[in-house]
Length: 267
DNA sequence: AGATATTCCTGGAGGC
DNA sequence: TGCCTCCAGGAATATC
Image (cartoon, rainbow, N blue to C red):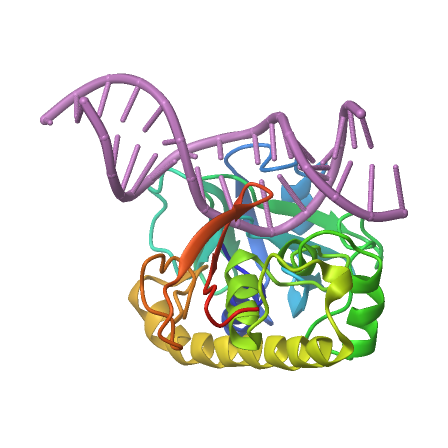
């Protein structure tokens, strides 16, 4: 569920709490999530100080003082719980003991998340990724990629090789905002529509980050949990509701996933 | 290579 | 109230 804005919000929350902290102890409650943890992950993290936290796509890159990075992906249900007083959670998989006496816990019921340690800049999960939507991403780049694809536009903008960070929710929302039908073939999207898509995707992601940032203080104040933040959506999970144009929002299934859209205004 | 199906996992919702 | 089935979804992997 966390898409780019949620991961960026988590990055900011973790930065506030973690930068400059030394990891004094690591408790692994299991040996894998989606993938096995790297050999001796607990020992390799112990004694390290966190110097910087970056984001690439939906991955968090937690830089350590020896140059290595802890790679964290939240999958569907992953959360970092900061300043935890105790760990009784059923799905608390990893506990970090920090040098200020606090405890940070990685909790993930569905275990789709990833934790790994990388020494250099290359990683199997990162190397094939497409451009960052909030970086130097242009409509020309998008048009070139869509041109070659005969799948529905909704499916193609979910492809992390085309552009990163967009999940099911923002794909639906962006298409509604640009009035493009999710069923149109990617190769039939015009240059003008690409310009619109790029600018609306940048806008909606920025807005969501701003909203996440504003809820972060309150949200983290309650239980210190950093994970998924609900935002205001126009079409996602709103089957049967009225679209802003007056039409009725429908749900269809594309490649096994729900798409919410308005057939009246999205052409 | 590109398109599609399958897989991982648990909690929550809905049906009876 | 309880049990069953289905569904949610990120992204690697396999298969055609």
